[in-house]
Structure formats: C-alpha cells, structure tokens
Amino acid sequence: MRTSEKPAVNTAGLSGPASRKLPVPPRERKPALAALAVLLILGGALATTLLVLRSGDRISAIRITQQVGAGQQFTADAMEEVQIADTGIDFVSWSQRERVLDTFAAVTILPGTLLTDDMGVTASEELGPGKAKVGLALKPGQMPAGLNPGDRVQVVHVPGRGGEAESRVLAQSALVFSVGGEKGRSGGSGQITVIVETQVSPVILQFASVGEVAVAELPGAR
Image (cartoon, rainbow, N blue to C red; front, top):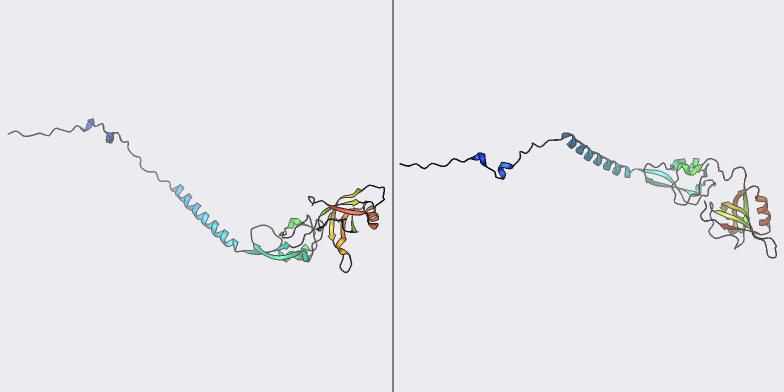
C-alpha cells in the first residue's frame, strides 16, 4: 500500500518581503522631555492666571488735564485722580499730589498724560538765572490763535507805519509761560507772558510799550 508523502518546505530559501523586514528597535522613553512639557504647560497656565488676577488690580494715579509748559509749576487745577490697571509702570500716585505741586514740568505735558516721576523737576531751568518773564499785551494780528502755556514763539519787532527800520527777531525761541491776563483785568485775551533771556527783555519791553511787538508760533518746538 502506497502512502503519500508531503514534500518538506524549505524555509531557508524564502526571499519574499517578510524575509527582508528589519527588526524594529524598542521605543525609547524620554521621561525628561515629558517632565519639561508638563512644566511648560503648568508655567503657561500660572502666567495666564497671574495676568488675569493683576488685570483686576487698580492703582490711583495723576492725570494731567491742562497743558503744562516746560518750566511751569504744576497746579491743582491741572491734575485729576484716575484709577488705572497696575501695569508695573512707575506712575505718580495721587497721594503724592502735594509733592507734585512743589515741582516744575521738565517738558511740555499735554492733557490726558499720566504723570511719571521723570516729568517733574524740583527747579526750573526756564525760570533760573539769566531768564526773565515778560508780559505782552498784543492786539489782533500780533499773535496766533490757540497759544497755550509751553508753546514756543518768536518775538519779533514789527515797526509801525512810516518807520524806516525793518522787522527783526528779538527772541528766537521764547517759552510761553501763560496766556490771558490775571483775574480782574480787562483785555486778558491778548495778554501773554513769555520767558526770554535777560539781555533782550529791556528791548522787548521798549518795543512792546509802543505796540511794535508780535509773536509767531513755532509748532515743532517744545
């Protein structure tokens, strides 16, 4: 009786894709990177929380309501209290307003500005030695409209009709200290006070007394 024999399978000679697959190395775990990622996530969440919490912190600050010219002393009418978010900027606290009243503006400060320490000085260079305050009573056409304290102007000699002299600049860049006359005086709308060098103040006063002085604004100068 014949028995069928199954041929033996030669596995050593396989050349298919399965026989060419390279062994896969085991996945390497990196616990340090995972820990760093967790720390970054926690740090970002903490920073966000702090920003949200600090946005609710309010501090009292001083806001300027009127233009204060360089060299001018701060006044109570030019300041108001405002509550702002604590951003870390060193704004002057409203509680320090009495100290501010004893100082002068280091630069021209426009309305709406929040006051910082570097905007004020204890002594005004504009009002120091070698300077003089000169009051001018000007007529229409002798001064531009809209002048404010802190503006810079040229003071010009404008000879009257029939005069042989030509116009000339008496003060190249005079600081406007105040605009308008004192309370109780008439004609205040044409009165301004400017700060000039002491050596030219007598000449300016001489020509101003006969109405031969005009001022021209220097918009780009502060």
